Image 1 (cartoon, rainbow, N blue to C red):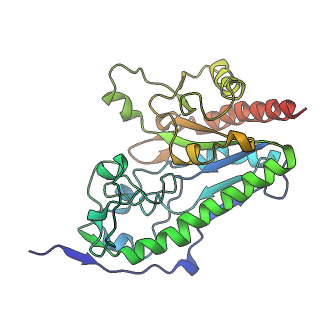
Image 2: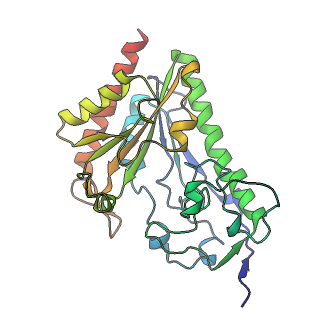
Amino acid sequence: MAEKNLDFKINYKKLPVFEEYSADNIEFPLVLSVPHSGRILPEGFAENTLLPPKELLSSCDTYVDELVMPLTKLGIPMVSMNIARVFIDVNRDKIELDPEMYYNYPEQNTAVGRRCRVGLGVIHRISGNNSPIYNGKLDFGEVSERIRYVYDAYHKKLKQLIDKVTKKFGFCLLLDCHSMPSKIFKSMPEQKEIDFCLGTLFEQSCPPEMYNFLYNELQKEGYETAFNCPYSGAFITFNYCQPRKQMYSLQLEINRSLYSDEESQEKNTQFQKISLDTYQAIKNLAHFLLDLKK
């Protein structure tokens, strides 16, 4: 039996792609990015998948935007994605496309990256629980629209914020905020479970005083914190690390089990504490960065 071709269209005029906060009231040389907390499954997309909504959202960094939201009231700008990661992943290079996923992929020599091979390119082939998402091949034209109206829109806004902060303070640190599933540590027996991971591209993404400061703040609050394992930083951390332009980046990963029930995808009783402790650590980082300018 021939594989099914999936032809559907998304009405992007009705889609609130991202939220922006404190862009006109910037007080610190720090920008927050939350690319994976979105939970909107665009109409037309979910109906053409094999999975129920809960499974489609299993790869989301659920509630990370809410965890760090209080920081925006201090004058720290933030952009957070509203669209679910399973629809399009803005923390991948947009050329990370698997030709095998499309029935009309244009003929050209395209290298398939490592993430594409495991099903986690800019368009995911599998869910957070490794279940196939689609029961057929996608229209490359439709995916091109996803990139144009969602991916490009997010990165345009993020770049605008970084440029604005850099112009005002002479430098900028982008803190890319994520959560990590606790189950990842079960597949890494040599790695003990941690609470926070700071991804520095192996000490390349920002000056040591920046990532060491945040590390020490989290450690002081009693959280087990590590560098670069299990995550050293992905596309956003790499793409916005431009030291010659005084633009730096740092990836923050929070153990999802600290603040939520990972099975039900609901907040747990520790949510407010984790939010407050994260707020305090990043607030102190923001003031430290401001002092660096002086």
